[in-house]
Length: 254
Image: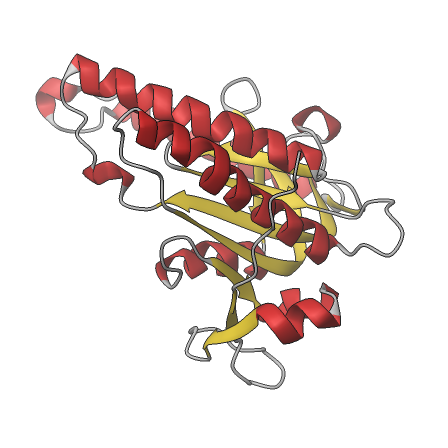
C-alpha cells in the first residue's frame, strides 16, 4: 500500500497499480460487445462485471430539500434523523416497487430509480413513472408529514425529476470487491441535473416525458419551466425543455 508517513506512493505499490490497470484494460477490450438490448432493468446477478443492458426507460431522481440543514450533531438528533429517513424512504421505495420501478441507489437524502417496459396495455413507461411520483407526494402530504407535524418535527419537502430515453444499465466495479449497477446515458445525466432547477415539492419533467403522457394530463397540468436547461437535441440543436407537472392526486374516501 501507499506509505502515509512519507506522503508519497511507494515504488512497489505503484508497480502493483500499473499491473492492475493493465490487467483490467486487457479484460475489458478482449470481451465481445458488452451491451445487450432488453426491456427489463437487470438485477446485479443478471449481468457480468463490465457488461450492460441497453433499454428504454424513465429515470427518476428524488431529493429531500435542505435536509442537511436539520440539526444532526447530538446522539438524540441523529436518532431523530434516522427515524425520519426510515419512515420516509420505506414508503417511497415501496411505492416505486408498486409501480414496477427499480431503485438503483439511496443517497441518504435522496434516491435514484428506473422504470422500464411493462405489460400493462395502454400505459406508457412515462405515465407509470409519473403516477409513481404523484403517489409519493400524496403519501408525504397526507400520511407522512402529518405524522411528523404531530410530533413537532419539521415536515419533509422534496422534489422529483423524471426524464425518458435510452440508457445502458451496467455493472461496474471490482469483480471480487465492491461492484454495482449504474445507469449510463444522457437521460440519466439530464434527470440528475434537473434537481438544480426543481423547487421544493415540485415534479419536473424532461421534454421526452411528454410524449408518453395522456393528452389531457399535458393540457391541464404541464407548464413550461425553462428552455434554458443547458441541454439540446444533438441533431437539431434545439433546446431541450423542462416542464413542471402541477397536478396532484385527490385522496379517495375510505
